[in-house]
Every structure is written in structure tokens, then in C-alpha cells.
Image (cartoon, rainbow, N blue to C red; front, top):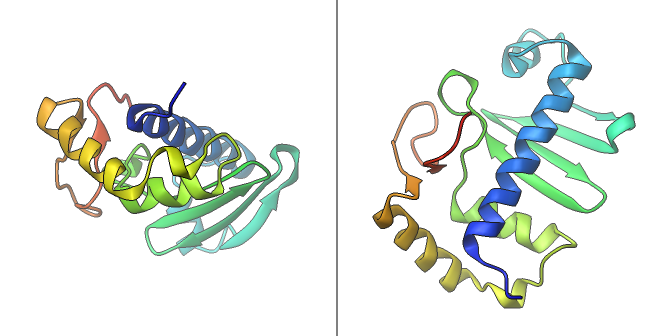
Length: 140
């Protein structure tokens, strides 16, 4: 079975949400960026019980796990399900579950445009990260 852009997006969003849940539980806060700004949460570290390394940057975070890496930006009101083609490509290249030759960059970007046109993906252009796209069925 070939990899679809929709599958990659759903997997990326699932992994981001799961990682953020782990961090929120570990640091006992919903507002991770505030914790980083107030220095109650370290900028870099690990959550060993989930084999997760994190590195907060700007309005986002790089999460590394043994089988994949996700880099994401927080959206409005702490929203975490946002993505763009660059983040998806980085995820694809790091993920043991995918063969990057199955979904080249041009195809990924083309399929994202089609999904936006169909309404399956929303491009709300909201601050603080107007570049992020979201699944229309997202509940984050």
C-alpha cells in the first residue's frame, strides 16, 4: 500500500498531540511555552518514561523519539495540531514507518494544495503562526 499525504498528516498530528500530552503530564501544566518563558520548564531535556527528547524554540518544539522526529509550532490558544509541508517532510525523513521515495516533496505539496481546496485542510492564517494548516476534523 502506498503512503498518502492524508496518512502522513494524520500520523504527524497524532504524534505531536501525544508528545504534548506527555510533556503536559510530566511538567503538570497545560501552558508549556509559559513554563519555558518563566523557566519552570527547561528549554531542552528528556522524558525518559516515553523515550522523548524535547527542545523548545521560539513558539515551537522539536520532539525526538526513537522512531520519529516531529517539529511543531504552537498555534493560537496553545493549539498543537498545525503543520506545513516543511514539517511533514522533516517528519517523513525521520520516521521509520515511511519510505520518502513513496511521497516526494512535489507530490506532498501538490496533495496538500488539493486537500486545502477540497476543505479537508484549513488554512486559517491565525497568529502566532499564520503559516500553519489544520485538519478540518481536528479537535485541538
